[in-house]
Image 1 (cartoon, rainbow, N blue to C red):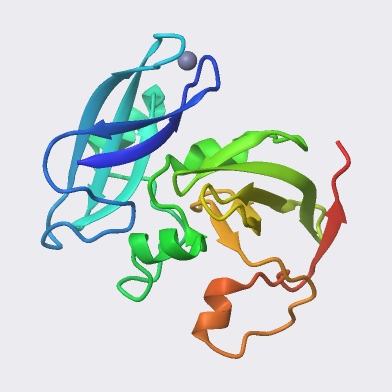
Image 2: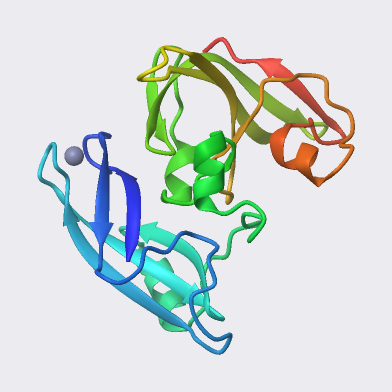
Length: 215
Ligand SMILES: [Zn+2]
């Protein structure tokens, strides 16, 4: 089954949904033998506006590779031909599995629909759910490459922990065709000492520059 935070395509409200009834699987999980391909569809209804949408889970070579919402005709045809839209990268498993990332509030949130995050243009003050936590956008940035292409959207986000009252800040990194990812707030990282640093910190890619986004 899937536990997903889904943004309603009609009203834009986020809600959590449980789909199916076996063990919970996250995007990137290996859930079967490597010859296994299938797609599974679920109908759901927005809890706010009651509009219906279709969720499609895609398993490619035994791995849960993507989840789509209201696939287009073109996407449907590809799914029928078993040409599934793979993401450019998946969480480093089993080193940082979902609950470990959730505890640290770092790394990829693999219980979302990846395509829904990069497309939304967040404003300062907006709320966005990640790892079952509601984050508030504090600052926004863009990473642009030397051909003037938008590579990533970066938001500084914060939340107040419920019991301790502690304020937590993170960088939210959104890139096309990747899972939304949280990193610690540290600018000017030029290299990673080890895999742990690579997991926790953000480095502006070569040939790219960071710009403040005042829109
Ligand atoms: Zn809705």
